[in-house]
Amino acid sequence: MKSSNLLSIGLVGGFLLAILFLAVGSLATEWRFPALLPERYTFEHWEAWFQKKAWMYYLVLSLLLSAAVSITAVCLGLMTASGLSRDKRSFLWLRLSYLPYGLSPVLYAYSMQFFYHISGLAGTWLGVYLAQLILVYPFAVVLFFTYFDSSMHHLEDQAGSLGASRAVVFQSITLPILRRPVQTILIQLFLVSWFDYGITSVIGSGQLKTLTLIVYQYIGESNLIYSSLASCILMAPPMILWLLQPSRSTKQDIPV
Amino acid sequence: MQLFNFTWSRAFFLLLGVLPSVAGLVYSFLYSIGGTGALSTGWTGRYWLNLVEEKAFWISLGLSTLIALAVSLLSGWASIQLVLRWKSQLERPWSAPLLRLPMLFPPIVAAFIGYQWLSNSGLLARLAFLFGWIKEPEAFPALVNSSNQLGIFFTLFTLQLPLFCLFSWHQFKEAKVEQYLEQAAILGASKRQQHWTIAVPILWSRMKPTMLLYGVFLFGAYEIPLVLGQPYPGMLSVFLHNKFSRFDLQEIPVAYAGTLVYALLVFGVTLYFFKTPNRWADE
Image (cartoon, each protein chain N blue to C red):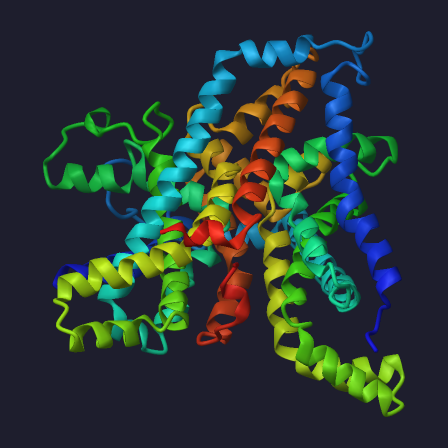
């Protein structure tokens, strides 16, 4: 019992320590081997980062990109799952939704790169938006599928037989029931897009920078301070969401 | 009375959800047999032959399979053992959010932290120096960018274990394992028997689909092996990415052939295991 307690503390503590490590790293002036902690701390790097217009521009664009991808995918996924779940062979559609996950995102991007080049979308924000949407949309369908079960169909049909139009059924039956799942799935898809590196680096053709690519650039330059700083910013949205909804447990935690 | 009728949903799904993947795979196939591409001179099987003859490809494939299996199975097994020991703690409201902590880490950040902690001038090496176990950074065992791939394994395992604990805990509740254990205790089963002959087999068989699904994700891991692995041959995604981005254009059709092998392998394994639900109930 004691050893498992130690392990639990170690496991959870390790992740909290990792977050602390990033914060300390971003405030360090110098942090060379064998020092366990930096010699001095400064806010200079943070100030410099936020004063640099180009970085702020990429930060805002990264946020907008992920917001656009997740909102579109949720809307489309909701509508598609609503229709497909009515089919007797719905399991087939569900299985097809897993198709993009057969490849890792970076290889998926390479397999489709040609189409982005000929359409002139490679290296553009629209191209990256579309590529990310194509990746997360089937995921949205899979996630919403579980909620369109027979009881949901029954409720929708009952409202329909009482004379409600499609829009009214959706607005007053489907959406209120799915309010929490919609929020959760929106957050999940936002994070998939926000964390993406492979698709943006391939379809963006090195011409676009999102925050993940900036982190990788700093890692490549062996710049500990700015890698930590950009990592802190990259982790800020999921961290805020985590702190805001600490005890939420949803169906989506369970993949199968 | 759904918002979108079935015909529209199907058409839309096929267009946005299925067509791009299929088009990508068809294009990859055409490229790999010389049907298209910058240096295409007509249909040929030599790129496939090059791939099959390339030793590094098989090493990459084996390495990815090994790491995916090791991380998935070991973290699955460890999560079951931990959940059975942590039962009382897991009931507490803060345990689930804490186990979700790894989800906050983008793979690229996890890779960065893995590097900063495990490299020979990293945090662990500094601690080892502080305790006098090593005299210089080079004396610290090579965990990152080394052929033993331990840095990749540790990082993926650490990210996976808490999530698997969450899933195992869900299965523990869903399968009502506690009730089985109580019944077994009434019938005289020892703690050891309850653990190994009842709880572990139930959870293991229920965790298998999750382990497979995550095994597939781990097989395609990219950012973590990119930062923590060896540049060559590396895990499969990194190996193929390197081929795609090399200046030698002759490598690109080979990379497309490799991508197809990867896709077929994943589809084959997934289809085989998900075809009949009974396949999971063997044990």
